[in-house]
Length: 542
Ligand code: AMP
Image (tube, rainbow, N blue to C red; front, top):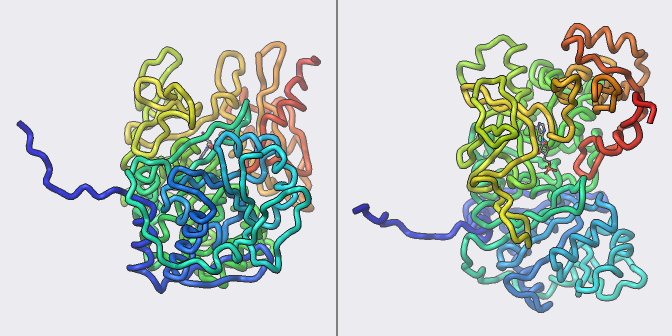
């Protein structure tokens, strides 16, 4: 007979993260760019007090454990207070992506059953557009003081956040709910069909945030200053708003100013040491830094994910600017970081080129997550670094079924990610493509990610995207889109010559299209669907 463990059974709760942050690092700072532009500063314990005021206010509005509160907001201090107040009260914090089409936004607000929606004043026009389609929302709360409260014609019950919480007590007894209760809800970007909701439990978020704090992941602790550029409406900013309070790190929130000049200034003035965001943000930042001949004084590490980080950019960050790139992989369904490309002691001694190539892969699964590859027939593929198959994940912060879905999303207990990957014998995973983006040419696969990475290594290229285009002979052929850097001459032949030295001949794009910009989706990723719609038949004459 086995012996029962004789340890306490304390639940992993979001309220416990807040209480820990406030009691152990109460003086630690939170700096937040207000939507109106000024910087707001206060401490963890100030934030905890205001989160409790909000919890009392929500209760007074008639909300109860299980109620859902939506947010359409930037990364700022009021949004942070809502993260803790809502989940801490046993309610569900539903973060909405403001870049969704209003119809999709209304769909997710209704699907989630939001009763109250918090919004930044920037998004007042969006609220006006969706409110008539969301009759079950009883209150709309603008994240501002009474002086900045927008008048939204036709929308009743619009409150100013500051007025709502002003007279509330800063004491609140957090309910002790089951750690498996839903705490936050985030919908997938929904490139096909309606967005699908992923309801994160307190347990999943806490474990994921603790994972982010680990030294081999982002190393979030009390000597760091963390700037999450990744939005709080996209997978809870990879759980960094929780990780900062767990580790006791200073938290810097950029508000609506996500342009490279503002981000650089914030990093320097607030002495940011760790940041996190999608590659497009870092491309813009590096261009700004290069153009103005700047350096990073304090930044030593940046987490990157959401799409593949090109090797050329990793090299620049590391060799020119001394910033260590932590390239991770995850998706809405994995509540943030699932794998991370951390270098081991032996890897650090590798020649620069090999080190950067390793970091350009998506790395090893973090503890709590397991990964494997599956072929079309459901068989597990070997971890040999070359066999490609669909990446399957399972673990403590992976979705089991979508919100309100009747059926599980799993296949034999594993979640099929829709990503095509390889895994090396050492466990290093590399994303080769999305199942829908991979290019099938003459029966073989071409990785659009590899081609894009090869193209952005050219010094005149700012951004690159590759799609598969129907072809009468080869089924599909790659088409390359290039955004040139300002004032950089580059023609098709020069681009193809450059690629010839870097990729197999049959991988060479069939054509190169120079564009002023690429269509970016709500989370900063290139919308390949849009490119496919416009150019998908470019070679077939259809
Ligand atoms: P989302 O749920 O919107 O965050 O999208 C998740 C998808 O982004 C994944 O399934 C991948 O296709 C892609 N993705 C995330 N991180 C990476 C990465 N480091 N490299 C390549 N693709 C990535």
